[in-house]
Length: 78
Image (cartoon, rainbow, N blue to C red; front, side, top):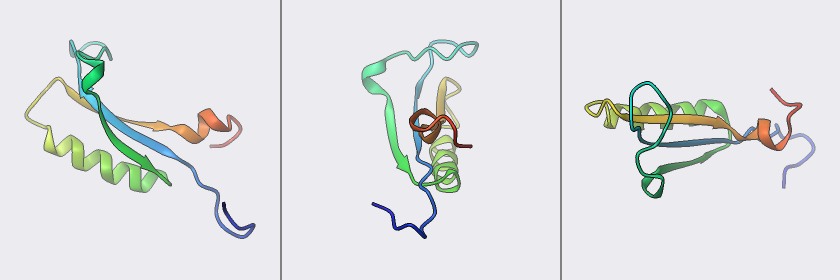
């Protein structure tokens, strides 16, 4: 729980997987999605995303995404 003076958590999910084609976001195997983690802000999520994207740079079908979970939980936030 946050104190009244703390900044609000803006949760972000980083995940990825291998796509079936380069044209669509259709995952080859949903059972093998790589859930990198949930992060308290965009900056830390971006750092994790960059690291995973760099690790898989040799596989053109591998993609990682950042999901702004705070927008799903509270649509009024930015």
